[in-house]
Image (cartoon, rainbow, N blue to C red; front, top):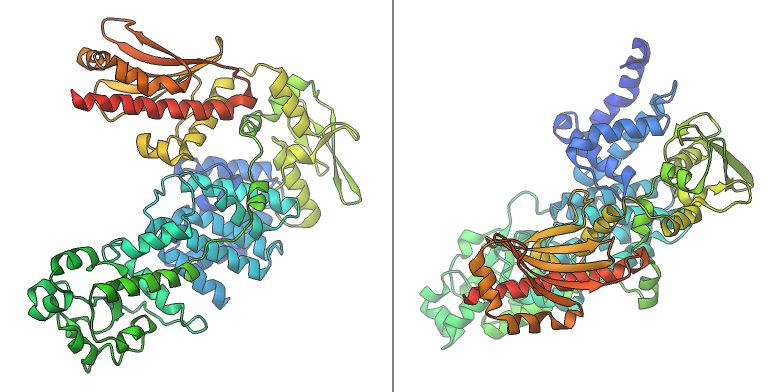
Length: 606
């Protein structure tokens, strides 16, 4: 709005209006905010973006990238328009490539919108020639498998937004290093085995499909139609018009029918209860009212929609059956579940490849929280210091400013090494390429990388924010532990914690659990903090049983009464609190908190 009117008109006509049209002129007002938040999530990965921060982060990105400079606004709008095309392909069936369009429509049907930033990042790499078409297709198939397997196995999705943002950041690093994005993506997913972010195995997926209630399942129609279309890969059937619905082969009212009771046998009630809504007993039909509750032979022979005339492959095996009983239902469930393993496949990578993509150490998270200003002050990188990087045969130089910004060769000043490196890449290549600036820049022509300087700062200097770094890493660690999430919920979205303890609710009045990080005295601990005397006395009366539950934690157990109103049961572990030991401390604290929850469960006996 600060530009001359004729330039405003030109930018609107040539760029902004095209963005509106790309997102859908009729629905633009409804989708633009969500599109912008998703785009900023890609830009700021691994940080997740909440709605209230969109404007602030958008403005910061514009300034840091130099788009507020004269003549640069068109480049910003080009970037937004490019991402708008990605978003429309993902959410509005706007992709020209038929193979991509079908896969994206299937992912969209799963209704897991937190995956959209990840898909946008895939598209950006694809149009930027960093991702071959076949690899892009493979990654979309893997994404669909990951989401659907988790849905079938009822794995909680509350931490996926942070996870997908972290995947974007990790894939950015792989791309910048010239690595294989498809392999990296599969390895990252497989590397989450045993956590809340895992991809269910073939065994878990097949078992859940064969036994769960698939009729009440939110994605039952998607399940059946996608299975059907797996036999029509080149020319998938269109099930979007609402003609077809889910049909029970053994009907809902089977127990009211003499014929069905005879077919199901003496144990017909058990067979009915166990198998009515399972995958083996469900199919698709356009003639649900006509087939209704009829005996199996009549359903087969019906002139409208009868199974004998049905052209759907998912019902084909019913043509040759005369009896629909327990054995038939279970056998069909197994066959369809086996088919599903191919439709929603599990990536095949060796353990060594998966391990090669795992983050080396948890403490790198603490390193990332140290700002360039902090590193400069600690390492005495004074204003005027030259930062140097190599771009092919070219040497690129930048200068540290008086307020610890980084001035690059075109005069732009950026406030972080990564933004400065990304801006340099953009100026030299004409493309947006995310760069890890800490590894990109060196201090002087032959000096150490900023990454090494930052690592040295962390080990040599007592960081005043060490507690917040510790808790930030701990919350993320907890979010990766399915046992912790099930017991306490996912804390990974909590606000910054500068204190020496963190509390966790037990969904019980008068008692909660606490984790401690006592930096000054070098110990960590867990406790139950109790404000109701009767609860404390109830645990004390079971002291032997309580202490047996806590014994193998390895710490010292204390029963304390700090005041008349509060009492606590504490396990304290003296430990080395240096950042390289944080991974071990996180594991101990989680074990301790889970054990404290078990101790609190003894109160149910009172």
